[in-house]
Length: 173
Image 1 (cartoon, rainbow, N blue to C red):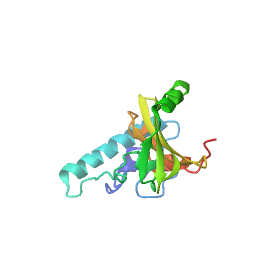
Image 2: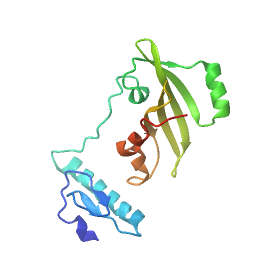
Image 3: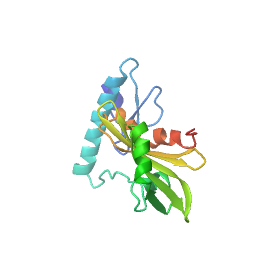
Image 4: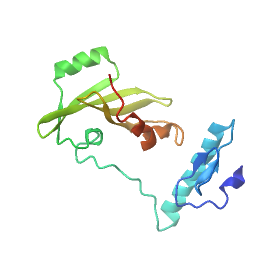
């Protein structure tokens, strides 16, 4: 199994695949998924340390542009204003939903386009702080996991766009 890493480029993160075809794909060991993931996480950590400390090409983590609106700007990309909902309304929501912490009205050109919900729920390793945008048509505009303590390479997949984008356009009703 270890030989499947030999000769791989350090340019891109390595990923597990059932049938590897790309240069950055490593054979997933059937029946040993957690162990395979653990090895891959360690190799990717070594790769990043090598690039950051021993080369002129450090790994730069890309950050999304929130346009100065924080996480709200990530779930409503066209909104130009966010207003915290009325405190009494928020308390009513929180009384019936223990996960909701904050709610903001998203506006564009003065018109309400939806609501941004800040939630805290439980993950495998601790709390998950998530922001979910729900448009006035009742569909999910975006979600973003903004804070977590999940296992690198396994639970952290919740922060990848492939996972988060799978919610976009889904009905919230």
